[in-house]
Length: 304
Image (cartoon, rainbow, N blue to C red; front, side):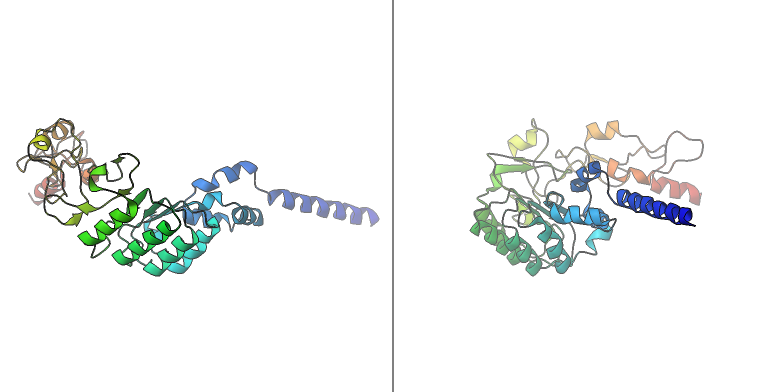
């Protein structure tokens, strides 16, 4: 009996040691935490007490908050945003909220006041925000001698030329000091470290929109009449972004392509029109064929 009790005690002691060792994640796992998406990061905090404590004490994973996935953005509210950004302990550098319509001016203002060193503020399509709320947030950052390096507000309603001019004054930014290229709207060139705003005043229509430059340095139109403008004023190739004429080659998806891009892309076996890469998923591949049919031709053949 004494031997059985002793053995049971030893087994229990071993079990406790095993549980303790299982509860301690490998140190290398902590290296990946700063690279996890926001909600995966929050989920990791629920895995074990060790992870929870590590995330509570380490601000590095919380310095850059990005919410851009469909499931995530529908869950983000002012209250949640304030709680999450508070983990940066006032040292938040990047805040990216894409199409988060539950975020309001009060939420952004609270976050900015708690984190006066934000360098990137990206809130495109956040329709719960107003131009006045954005100006208030930038003004708050200026009070702490912080100048944003990047501001994205495309898709926020009722932005006027006066709002843009106010923001440019606050950021010490000029429309001619940075270039932006279509279709990769994240690609831009900053001159002399000038802060970048993703919208501006189109020199063609005088409206507040995303304004693009031609990607072709040797563009003749650029030299003659200028081809800087919004996508409504200057027609651009969906692939490379250089300006094109209205009679340029159409794609199967009805986007416009320059001749160089049109030639390089695979064509529909029936109408000889290509899809741009963005809409290539619409290709219909017949059984046993090495080519494809566009959606329109495939529907026509089915009807026949």
